[in-house]
Length: 390
Image 1 (cartoon, rainbow, N blue to C red):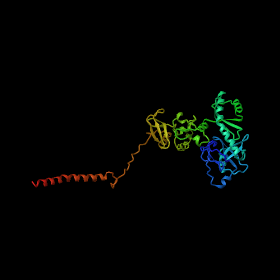
Image 2: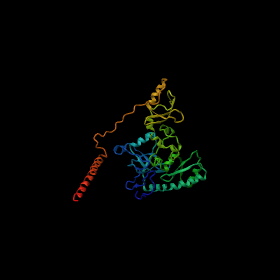
Image 3: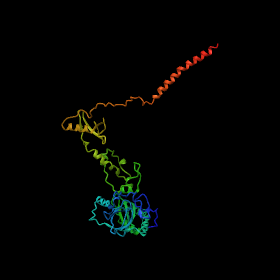
Image 4: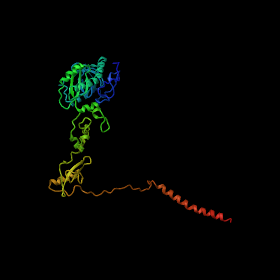
């Protein structure tokens, strides 16, 4: 693989777009979106744990293949793998013991699952045809959008991925409702002379493909490192005492922000000992209703009105538990909070007196005063000397 154009966009989801001509491997696999940190790479036996390897393709598409020919493959090698029909070109993203962990994570049983084969390392002919297929994807996507608009289909074709041998093309589309694209497949097959496969993606996958800057000032998580999207509900916002404002909670994809789940476990662990918010506190003066909670300071705010925040009073969680226990016994608490005696703060005492910034100014002023008293005395002596000759 000597004649390699380093400027071609073949990296399939990585930031860096270059290849090492000597090792014939992708140099971007360690810094891109789909990389996996192999924390067992220093252990020699870890690479020989399994012959199953993880191969990545365009965007977030990954698959697992079996190295039936016992090829010496490392992370970053470009390989030709089995496809239906023909073969595809991908990049090795993970090998060794970590593949078994990934299979277990994805619920794949290695003994029952039928893995496709890794044929060989990509040759120059395979690589050239792969680059030709990649260069056709942009024009194919734009043309297919025009065709779908002419047919009046309520869908958006967001991306196109050609197979490595140019015999098949995957069209990724977004649609709110079900779309009958049987006629569209016939038209696309006649237009591009390849086998057509339609694959629906969600709004989050589309936002990750396009990219952008979030309200935090950083690049979107879905376009940098996230590969799997967990469901986000409004309960995550309620646990964190966030305002249920759709404009603030929604991301660029129009769905709830994925970052709402990042600190959710911390809030849930901190609120295990908190009493239920629905329990009202019975006092002798009336009833106190819960309004909001400061989770990490362990303070619950109560008011005298169930709807409006009137006479908000911060109450420690321990005090709230005491009042609830009194109410269970049929007793009412005198007040929400217990007044504590003010703590006497011990200020810093400057015993030596050497920390004063003005300690040198006082001596300087004393010296000036002595000089002022001496001046008029010297003046009188001069006057007496001048008068004596007369």
